[in-house]
Image (cartoon, rainbow, N blue to C red):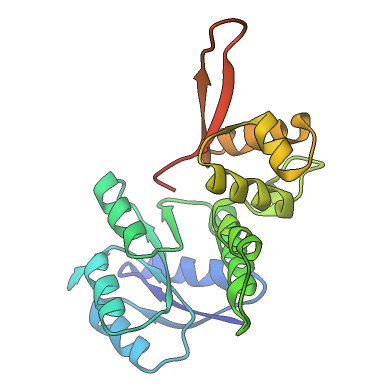
Amino acid sequence: MIRVLVVEDEPIAARAHKAYVERVTGFSVVAVANSRIEAERALAKGGIDLVLLDLHLPDGHGLDLFRRIRAAGSTVDVMIVSSARDADVVRSAVAQGAVQYVIKPFAFSALRDRLLSYKEFAEQVGGGDDVDQASVDRALGMLRAPASGSLPKGMTKETLAIVVGALRELGDASATQIGEFLGVSRITARRYLEHLADTNVAERTLKYGQVGRPETRYGLRRSE
C-alpha cells in the first residue's frame, strides 16, 4: 500500500484529492495538510511514501516546502498538483525531483493514470537488489508513459516504456533506428513513437536529406 499525504489549502479540493487517491487500488491517504506547517508535522511522524503537493499554500510556496523536505534528507516522493503553469516553476519542480506534475483542474482519470504510473515505477525500483540499465529505463519510462488503460488497442505499457527507454538512450532517432535497437519492425516502432508524440511525451522533427522525402525523427520532450 502506498501511503499518501495530501497537501492542499482549499478544503473542497483537499477532500476531492483525498477521494480521488483512495479510489485507486494500492493507495491510501494517511493525512491531509492545509499548510506548510501541517505538512511538515505530518512528514515528521513518518510513514509517508508519496506527497501530493499544491504549490499555493497560505504560509509559503510549495516549492519551498519541497526544498525543506530534501534539505532534511527525506527521500519521500513528491507529485506536484497545482494550477501553476509557469515554465520556470515546472522546471524547478522537475529539478528537485518531482515524479509528476499535474495541472489543475483535472479529471479523476488524469490523476489516476499518473498514480498508476508512479506505482509501477515504485515497484520497479522499490526492492533492495541492484538493478540493471534495462530495469532503470523501464522504471523511468513508467513515469513518462500513459497508463495502460489509455493506450490504443494492441499496444502495451511495457513496450511503451521500453520505447521511452530507447529514446532516452539514443536521444533522437527515427522509427527505423528504434526498431533495429529494440528488435521490432519499423511499423511497430513508428506506432509507439507516434503515440508518444500525440500525447506530448515526445516530439517530432523532420530531417531533410539531399534526395527523397524528409525523415521523421523523435525525441523526448525536455520538459518531461
